Amino acid sequence: MFKKILLAVLVAAPLCLQAQTLKFGAVNPTEIFNVMPDVATANNTLKSVQDKYEAQAKPLQEELQKKQTELESLMKSKAPDSTIEPKQKEFEDLYTRYQNFMQQAQKDIQQQHDTLMAPIQQKLVNAIQAVGAEGGYAGILDANFLLYKGNNIEDVSAKVKAKLGIK
Image (cartoon, rainbow, N blue to C red; front, top):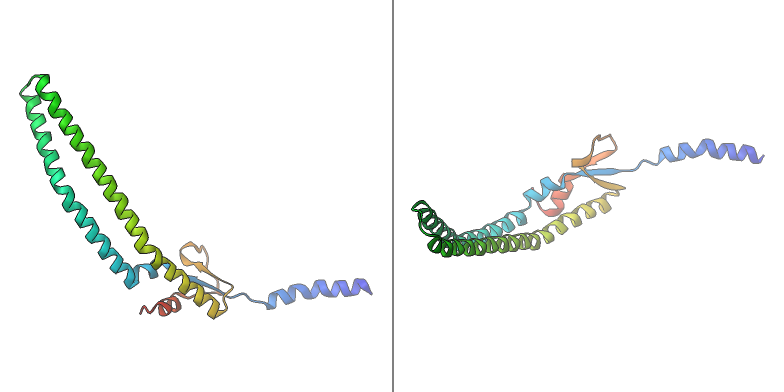
């Protein structure tokens, strides 16, 4: 009797599992992120910061080029080392200042990028999670990484865009 019940359970178990179909969604978060209006605003802000740093770097670049030209002309005219060495030191100091400025500018731009983009990325993640919860999905996958998309995976990009108010 026990064997018959065990056999019935073993036969019925795969049928019960087959009856449960899991619902999955797929979304292209990069595509949606790039069309979010907040991203365009953040990019404009970053562009103005970058333009500000470029304007500040321009006089340094010009001075650096001037020093380099002076140094090269002294070397071509075979000026004594006592004349070349101080000019070379000035050039090297200015070059170091310029490099430090550019590194600091790049660091600041990256920091501002991260600060501006983080809430936008979180907004996208929240929208994807909301669509997943509302739609009863077992999971939502990144469409960029799907090697095969079967019939049980629905593209939910339009739903996420609607949740974000994007047409």
